[in-house]
Length: 69
Image 1 (spheres, rainbow, N blue to C red):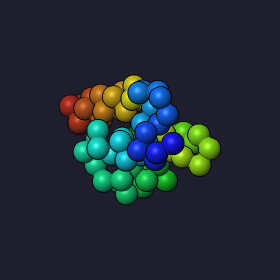
Image 2: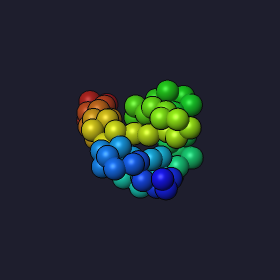
Image 3: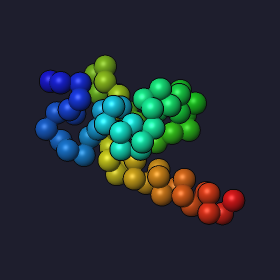
Image 4: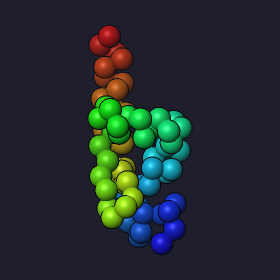
């Protein structure tokens, strides 16, 4: 299985795919994960994966925070 595909499940994204979707560097996602402030992620074996819905929910949350100050 390639590192750039999360198996056959299109709603699971690798860190590279998540970074591309968020338009953020991979290192930033790793840093957010370390701090516990970024979108929810989980490990499947040795790989870190993100659910597409979790990324979208996190973005919406960030938009709400910036709108409220």
